[in-house]
Length: 315
Image 1 (tube, rainbow, N blue to C red):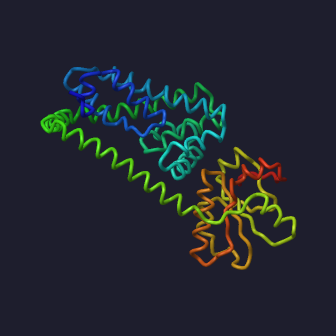
Image 2: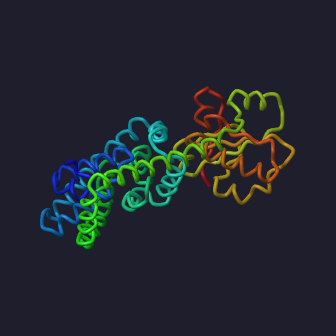
Image 3: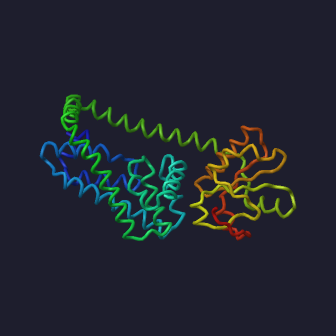
C-alpha cells in the first residue's frame, strides 16, 4: 500500500521524509513542506520523534536549500531572479515584496521571510546579490529556519490528536483519499498556473525596444522617461537612461495625475517581464493616457546594448 498522507509517510520514513520535503521546498519546487513538518510535530506528540531532532533535521535541510540560492545570488547576480521567474508560478509580485522587505530589514528580513509564502525563496539570493557576508547570512537564515520549522512543528505537536484522527479517517477511505489529495494538489497547481497566465496576458501590451527609445531621443522628439525602480534596485545598478526621472513605483501610483496627456511616455523597471512598468502603464491607460509603453528588458537591456547612461542615487 502506498502512503497517501504526510503523517503516514513520516511514520514510515521518519527523518528522511522530513529532510527531503523541506529541502525540495527550499530548492524552489512547488511542493509544500508544512504538512510534513506538522506530521513530524504529531510524531513528537506520540514519542516517535524528538523535538530536537525535528528542529535539527528541518532547519539543516532549509539552510542547505537557502545556501544554494545564496551562492547563486553571489555568483550570478540579478540573473538568478530571472531563473526564479521561470520556475515560480507568480514571481513578479513575490520578488517585489522580497525586495521591499530586504530594503527595510536587510539580513534581519531572512528571519520572518520564511513565514510569508513565496517571499522566503527570494530572500536568500537577494542576500547574495547585495553582498551579505556568509556568516551573517547563515546566522539570520538559521534563525529563520528554526522559527519556521519550530513553529509548524509545535503546531503539529499541539494538535497531534486531531491530526491523527484526520489521518485515520483518510486511511479508511483508502484509494479515495489518494485521489482527494492528488486532486487537491493538482487543482492548486492549476489555479496558480491560471493566475500566472492571466497576469502575463495583461502584460502583453505594446512595448518599446531600447533601440526605438534611443532613436526617439536622438531625433529630438519630446518623450518622458520614468525610472520606476526601488532604492534597492538603484543601489544595485546606480545608472539610468539619460534624462529619465526617478519615481519609485509606490510613489508613482499617487502621482499619475501629474503625467501630461500629450507626450510619449516610457516606463522602465528592473523586474521580471517588466511587470512593474507594465502595471503602471495599464494604470495610466485607465486614466486616459494612451501614449505610454514599457521599455522592453528594462534598464538591463538598455545597458547591455552599450547605450549611454547617467549616474543616479536614491534620495
